[in-house]
Amino acid sequence: MQYVVGNWKMHLTVPEAVALAGRIEDGLAHLAAGGVDLPRVVICPPFTALSAVSDVLDGRTVALGAQTSHWADHGAHTGEISPEQLKGLVEYVIVGHSERRAAGETDEVVARKLAAVVRAGLIPILCVGETEASPDAEKHTLAQLRAGLADVDPSLLESLLVAYEPAEDIGNGRPAETGQVTEMTAALHSELSDLKADAAVLYGGSVDQDNVEDFIKIPKLDGLLVGGASLSDQQFIAIVGEAAGSG
Ligand code: PGA
Image (tube, rainbow, N blue to C red):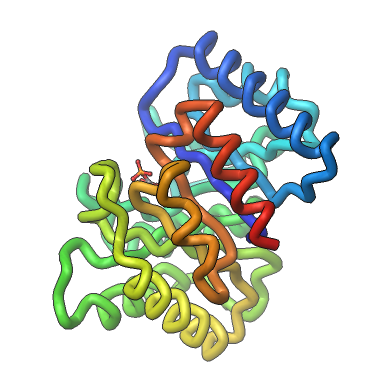
């Protein structure tokens, strides 16, 4: 697999985040020293910890991402952070996570945010996925993908990650069926190829060290977006190790 992304959500104080990032980097450096060819590993701490975590990373083993950002470059938007402000601090930004969509982020907002991320030269990790199982799930997810890319020319994107994250499989220890992920991975790749977008497809939703082996076997699945299990260095390193072993 090419990517493992950790989403720390609204967890950890600054010292806790720094300590976890250090342990993850040490663990991964150990794997690499043992000859493991690591995938691209990205961690997404809360905004409060980005600067301090960036100081302890060596910039080679682990890349940094933000969990969201605003659509404007700057302005009177109290409490918001723009991709312009994240430049130099992170390389990736998660856009359209289902927890933000549930809090009111529409497809139009997601599209504007994604365009702002691209404008700032950062790499978007666009999250898509149905909110509940239904016969229309695939249609819904592909429509979200198109809507999220509506404000950019997908064929011009230098780098794009799309994470398939069915909302009802997030954070509850019950990941999606591998058959469903296999179908959606293929459908997303085919839609992306229609859009002439060169993108990686990831799966996210209750991935942990015990079930990761089911997902690394999925054809054309390029990576994993890990929430809860990324808060444990031991689990996260184990997941990265499995993803590396899958080629
Ligand atoms: P989870 O979260 O691994 O805790 O299910 C995944 C995500 O929300 O990105």
